[in-house]
Image 1 (cartoon, one colour):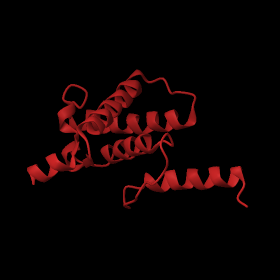
Image 2: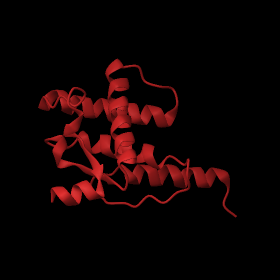
Image 3: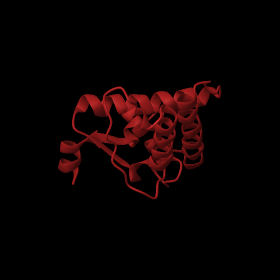
Image 4: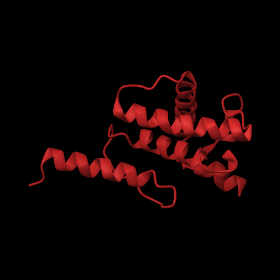
Length: 131
């Protein structure tokens, strides 16, 4: 039988793996387990290593999900801009990733907070139409 501690360690390792920008991954988990937050963290991580935000495409099935994801990425960037790290571990990780993304935003003069449309977070249908 797997202990709770072992399950938490496996979950932590899987979340770390998901932030490796050199690999692809699939997230399968029940509602409320933090899938969206993990995707936002991955998106922020990718923002910290690209030359332009348009190099990243995040796609969802619904406009509502795309809008929520874009709002949550922008919110993470605004929190990082305040430069006060949260105490909760998962929020601190998002903060650290957003801080790195903001550094690239500043260096590249992207203006993501004033021009969030540069973040290509869209539905599969809109991605297909663009192609």
